[in-house]
Image 1: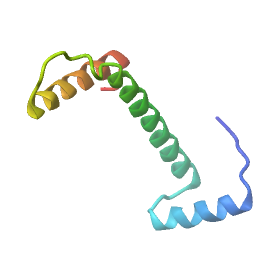
Image 2: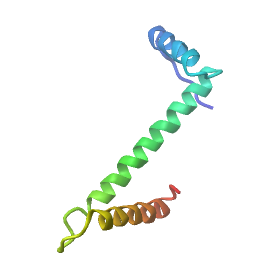
Image 3: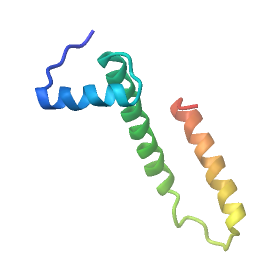
Image 4: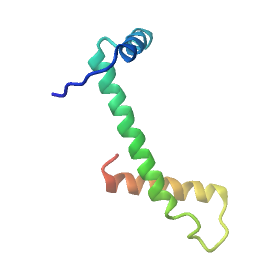
Amino acid sequence: MVSLKLDENMLTIMDKSLKKHNFSTRTEFIRDAIREKLEELNREELMNEFLKFKGKAKKSISDLALKKIREDVFEQLAKEKGWD
């Protein structure tokens, strides 16, 4: 269990968002926000890993082949990181 304090302004904004986006409780809203942030951080980490490969190819390649390579690299990294 985790407790946190938020100022009234943030709570007011959060409560309006709860109603607007059909969250039943503040806890549900906060859990969803944390999940989204963790996914964002994982995507950023994956992109940083992917960018390490940028410029490594020595030959010309088609856009379709490059797309396939990106998908393969993404899948491999996702498996290694347990993101699948």
